[in-house]
Amino acid sequence: MTTVKCISPIDGSVYAERETLSNDAALEAVARARNAQKAWAARPLQERVDLVMGALKEIENSTDRMTTELAHQMGRPVRYGGEFGGLQERTSHMAKIAADALAPTVIEDSAAFSRKIMREPHGVVFVVAPWNYPYMTANNTIAPALIAGNSVILKHASQTILVGEHLADAYRAAGVPEDVFQNVVLSHDTTSALIADNAFDFVNFTGSVGGGQAMERAAAGTFTGVATELGGKDPAYVRADANLDAAVDGVMDGAMFNAGQCCCGIERIYVHESLYDAFVEKAVAWVNNLNLGNPLEEATTLGPMANVRFANEVRAQIDEALADGAKAHIEKMPADDGGAYLTPQILTNVTHEMRVMRDESFGPVVGIMPVKDDEEAIALMNDCQFGLTAAIFTADAEAADAIGQRLETGTVFMNRADYLDPALCWTGCKQTGRGAGLSELGYHALTRPKSYHLKKA
Image (tube, rainbow, N blue to C red; front, side, top):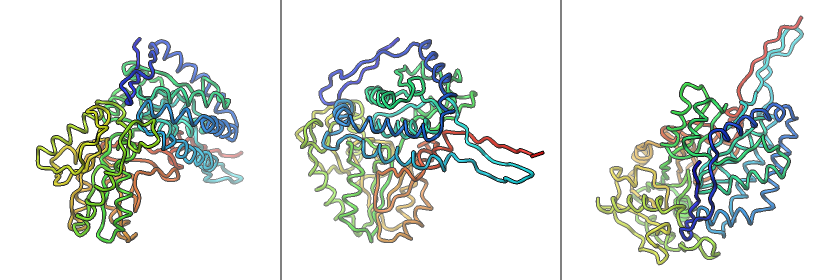
């Protein structure tokens, strides 16, 4: 048995500490989930929907807990009020579409035949959630999985272990049986052993590329479905016809919010050469208006990164780029302590040979390059191992659509970035992984088709 610690980025102290389950205790938890799942699936759909929405209400009644614990665990400033807005939007949408998304597809219903395709829950769904948006990313799967009739076991990131407990408290208070939704603390070895032992019927993992590879290796030969959302290096393209001020605001917010720790945050910017100088000037002014500091203080607009090692990776990418000829535009801020508190940075004179334009940074740094036309922008946007989202800022919707069709990405944005629309499928390509979250397709991922071909007497 090992111990998992959450080191607070605020001051480096141990904010929470939990013991991991032994292999035997973990197997018992899975067995309870499996035993409880059939009765849960047999409940009326609307009853499951109501219980999930009840859990959402419980979280709404404890948003102060959410906001404060997030600041301590991963550094998000309290001024932003946690994640309830997005959590409510996503959960409510999935509840609203559940009946239609899970309804049978009727091929024929005649005197001679009944032919239809039903949706069956997988059984036990295992959710491995990340720390950067720990409520929303976890519940993107938890809520629809439960609504669809699955039982769920959640393993949250060590950086946000209290989020798993808060979610479990909310679902339990709403009336979801304890064995139907369980929050567990597991070691990597136990996690891999459970997957390899075919303990789960479906695995949803959000995290690093290496973590996703470990999940797939563990599941090899078990035929367990594994959905992954992994790394990102999302680009933004500002065309010559873009509204400059709106583009600066949208792109820089997409790059810097949450200290750049967003799956779909902007990490590369390509600006038409006619707007390039003005864009850089305005972007630098935008970043210099940020207030780096303690996330518990209302004046803070940019908190520390979640962990010193994450900040050190960003610093390393910046230092390497500067050594190779990049130019930094932001002076070191007073709160930058060389640890988790990191000065946000804008780099120019960057190339795709630099790691800061190639590897995931997952922090408050962005490189900006000029481009001469759409063709060059498309080539650079696609020159990447990842494919989660891409943002195009333009006044021409037809052009954005045409460019979007040529981009190797999961989502195309126009005149916005870093947003997850629950009515649309959340997915990626390349090393961002394979999966289909939210929307009707999210329900399809969390269920299996079952066909009925009934010849009537």
